[in-house]
Image (tube, rainbow, N blue to C red; front, side):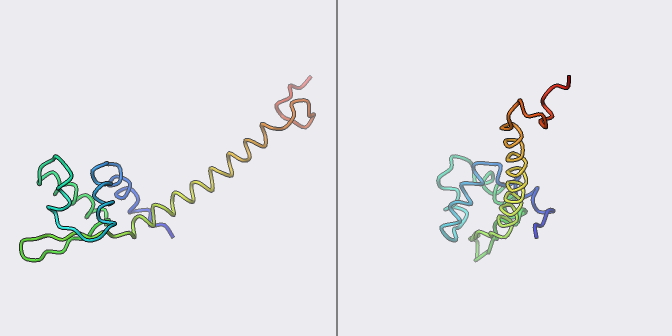
Length: 118
C-alpha cells in the first residue's frame, strides 16, 4: 500500500538534479559528506542543505562518527513512489487503450457516436 503522505517530499527531493546525483552515489554504498560533495562545484553548506532535504524525505540516513557524518541510502520511500507511478501507469494505460479503440472504429459504423445524426 502506497504511503501517500510521503510522496510529496519524495518527489520534491527527487526534483533536483544534485540530489538525484547524490542518491546515485549513495546507491553504490555509504559515503561521508566530503565524498558526496566532491563532484559538485557548490559549497559544503549547500550540500548540507541538499542532504537535509534527502534526510527529511526519508531517502537518506546519517550516522555520526566523531566529526564525520556518514550517509546511507534508504529505499523505502522510492518503493512507494514506484508503486504510485505503476498505479498511475496502469490507469492511464487503460484509458489510452480505450481511447485508441474508440478512435479506430470505422466512421461509417451506425453505432459510432461520432457519426452525425441525420
